[in-house]
Length: 344
Image (tube, rainbow, N blue to C red):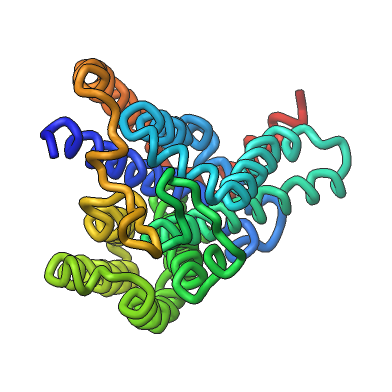
C-alpha cells in the first residue's frame, strides 16, 4: 500500500469526522427543539444558534463523498449502489431539513410554521440514525460478488449492530447539540440544555455495552484489530464519562469537547476496523482492499496538491466564522429581536 493511498483513506475519515462534529451539533439542536423547548419562541432561539452555520457545515459531507469518489472510486461505487436505499433516505432527510429553515421562518400561518418545524425535527432525528446504520453496515460482511456488486437484503441493512449504531450516533449528536446550545445561550435555555444533557447521559452506557456485544458477534474487529478496537472502545466510554461529569459541573466547553471526541473515535473505530479493506464480503475472496479500490498514483498526487492548498483555507474560514459568531443570546433578547422584526 502506498503512502498516498493510506493518506486519502485517512483524509476521508477525517472529513467524515469533521462532518459529524459540526453537523452533529446541528442535528442535536434540531432534535432539541422538541426535547428541550416548550413553545415556538424557544424553538426559534434554539435554531438561531445554528442559523449562520448549518448549511456550510454540510460542505464536509459533500467533500467526503467527492474525495471518496475521486480517490477510492470502487469503494464509492460499491457502497453507494449496494446501500442505495439508505443513502436515498439520507438525501430526502437532508432536503426536508434544509428547506424547513426557510419555510418555517416565512410560513404565513402558525400551522404552516409548526409543520415545517416538525420537518426540521424529524430530519435532524433521522439523519444521524441513518448515518449510524450506514457506518455499521459498512463494517459488516455483505453479500458481494467479485466485481464489487453488493446484493444487500433487508437484514443486511437492518440488524442489531446497525440499529444500535444508529441509536448511539443519534444520542451523541443530541448531546453535542445540547452542549452547543449551552455554549451559545444564556439564562433559562442554557440551564435547561445543561440539565437535560446531564440526565440523558445515563442512557448511553447500556447502549454502548450492547454495541460492543454486537460488534463482537457481527464483525471481525476483535480478530483482526483486537488492541486498537479495545482502545477505541475504552476511549468512547471514557469520553461519555467525561462528558457527563463536565455537564454535571457546568463545564460547557469540556462537555462539548468530550462529545466531539466521541464522534472522532467512532469514525476511527470504523476506519481502523476496516483497514486494510474498504468493504468486507461474506466470501473473503471478494472483499475489497484499499489498494484494489484506489485511483492511479497520478490522480492521488494531483488530489494531494489540491488538498494541501485548499483544506487549510477551508478550515481557517470555518474556525474564523465560529469564533466571529460565538456570542450568546438570551430568551429575552431573542423576543425583543422578534418584536422588532414584526414592527417592520
